[in-house]
Length: 199
Figure 1 (cartoon, rainbow, N blue to C red):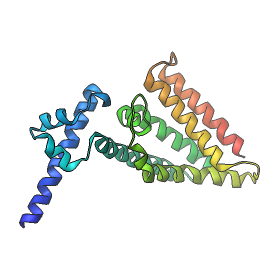
Figure 2 (tube, helix red, strand yellow):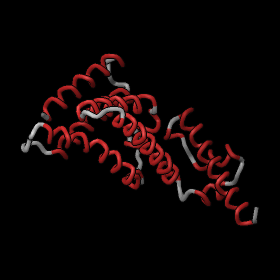
Figure 3 (cartoon, rainbow, N blue to C red):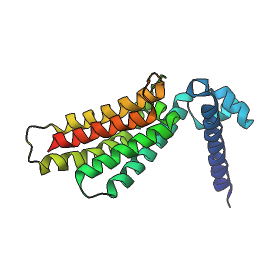
Figure 4 (cartoon, rainbow, N blue to C red):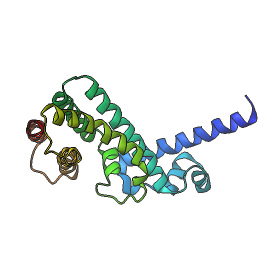
C-alpha cells in the first residue's frame, strides 16, 4: 500500500472514530450534549483533528441526518416493494415510517429538528426528496386508479407526512397520554381514511 492510500485509510478511520464517538454521546446524553471538545477527548485526539474532518458540529449533524434519510428510504422501498396495490403500498410505507421513527428516536429528532436547532439539516434535501418521490408514486397511482381529477397529489403527500410526523413527534416529545398501542391504532385509522379518500 502506498503512502497516499495509507493516509486516506487513516483519515477514513479517524472519521469513523469521530462518528462512533459522537453517536455514543448522543445515545447517552442526547444531541444537545454533543460538542467537538467532548468528541476529541473521547477519541484522544486534539480538537483541530476533528475540524480536519468536519467543519463544525453542524457538519456532524448533517452526516447523521443524511444517514437517517438513507435508512428511512431503504425501509420505505422495502415496504413499498412488498406490495403491488397502491393502497397496500401506502399502508406498508406508513408502517415502515412509523417503526423507523419509534425505533430511531435520536436520528428522527435530528432529521426533523425536534427539540433542537439544526441550521444545516436542509442540506440533506437530496435524501428528503428521494423519500418524497417514493411516497408520491403510490399516492398518484391511487388517485389515477380512482379517476380523480379533483385531488392534488402534492397536498395529499403533505397530509400523509403530517399525520405520520405528528404522531411520531407527539410520541417523542412525550406529552401524550396516549400509549403506543393506541397511537398505532390512530395511525392505522388515519391511513385507512387517507387511502379511501384518494379513490
